[in-house]
Length: 60
Image (cartoon, rainbow, N blue to C red; front, side, top):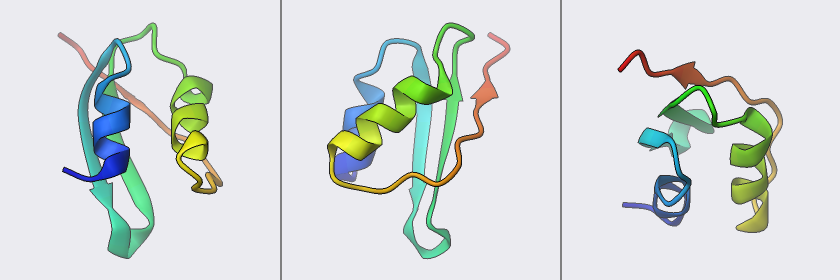
């Protein structure tokens, strides 16, 4: 587990995180109450730059 995955998994409502370093992407599955901005803040707090955020809302 990467530092990013660990930090995002601590966010309430985050159900799945996968960091794809080769593609410079993070895939997440979240509950509807999780905002893209909240995920962005977590990643930026770790010292990374976030260019764009797209989330997949879990159906369960």
